[in-house]
Amino acid sequence: MDCAKKTKLVLLSCGSYNPVTNMHLRMFELAREHLQIKGHYEVVKGIISPVGDGYNEKGLIEASHRVEMAKLAVESSSWIEVDSWEGRQADWQETNKVLRHHWEELLSREQGTDVVGTVKAGRKRKRIDAVSISNKRKHGKMEVAHKGLMHKTDGPHLMLLCGADVLESFGVPGLWKNEDIEEIVGSYGLVCITRSSFDVDAFIQGSDLLWPHRHNIHVVREWVANDVSATHVRRALRRGHSVRYLLPDPVLSYIQERRLYTAESEQTNAGVVLAPLQKHAGNHG
Amino acid sequence: MGRIPLVLLACGSFNPITNQHMRLFELARDHMHHTGRFQVVGGIVSPVSDSYGKRGLVPAQHRVAMARLALHGSGWVTVDDWESRQPDWTETVVTLRHHLQKLLGQQPSAADLQMPHSSLEGSSEPPQLKLLCGADFLDTFRVPGLWRAEHVEELVGRFGLVCVSRGDLQADRAVHESDTLFRHRHNIFLVREWVRNETSATEIRRALRRGLSVKYLLPDAVIDYVREHQLYTWQSEQRNKDAVLRPLGQQGAPSEPLNDS
Image (tube, rainbow over all chains, first blue to last red; front, top):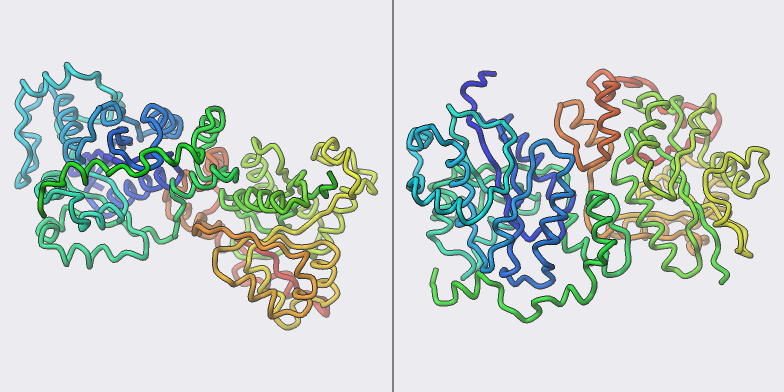
């Protein structure tokens, strides 16, 4: 194994994390293994970025709780962290904006190296100039702690980690802007964990938008079905059923102490339009 | 109040114990409590003995140790190594009888009982012990010659089953297709696990052999134990490779496969 050839990679996962579950955490583990075994990557960091309250999803509890629970969940992890930037924004942030934010953070940490030099040849990247980086750093503190794994000689890449349902959602009218999808798969890349029921390859094949970037879309097959979702966990909690062993114990304790996830909390944003749909209401395609 | 104190016993390889195993207890407890008739006061994990002869079975001392680590913070489920310490493989019904006797305090070693006696006090009803299992276990009754008829009768008649399965109708069908099970259907509690969660011990052993991560599928303490003792390698999976499963090998005696997941 030639370590010098391995490209360093950071995986970013955006989502409600309402609440974080073992399934979310498994997704990171599966992705890292797949990329390190099949690809020429060294996955150096995973970032959980819980969505902001402005997303307006039904049943979404406060971001502060969701961030805190995620932090408890990754306490025992050596490589997964939580970033609260997205959660702290008043307005909902499109996924590509969150990617851009984290990409800029990664680059700014590579201070002292030639930014252009870290750009992988042949890949399009957003032009980041030093001024815009320093402006952004003024506005928020760096949430992501150094783990000392990134080397200056190698610029790490950033990819979006998601489930197949996110990829599938690219097809939902009004939910995504084409140029945003283009940026995500073209400039960054996607690591997609499949559930057996969804044929990811066929979906990519059938999409003129995704097909040109198919080499940037890494499909990770999850051989063993694990449908334990946050929705299921919330339902069980509402009904007073145990969710122990579906999520880390510290997260469960946090929920129980504060009595989060009740029938009432599930009514949050009932009847409200999801932020992306609202935002793109005037757009077509 | 009249609720029957109930203890759930799960027999199996627990090779190794997983989050999925522990979920079975949680699901079963919720279900039995919601019937309004039971107060679940304890759960027992009873790992099978090494003489079971199953392929890939690591020594009982490890399986018991791992189960104890996993259930350390449980508060109501404990691990019992009686079955694993028996010189030969023990039929399920025999294990149930042993634990019921302990529960009813008829054994001199009742002091060993790891569940709080206070749970049993204040109830006018005698405690019950039921077998906790998965749907696959019910299907084994259909295999000709595998179970002694009187054992099946005792298992479902005297003790009872709490069977956790997916949202399909496999368990219902098994009860329907057996006259014995059907007759005792009121003592067979079918618990639905609506979400698929198929991360079995077999999958986990496979992942461990291949050096893949099993984090979040079983407790960190168990993963650490596996690493420390270098359990679950290609070699360990070859154990008992050509051996006959103990229940099937018994001469002139009934064979009873134990549920493994």
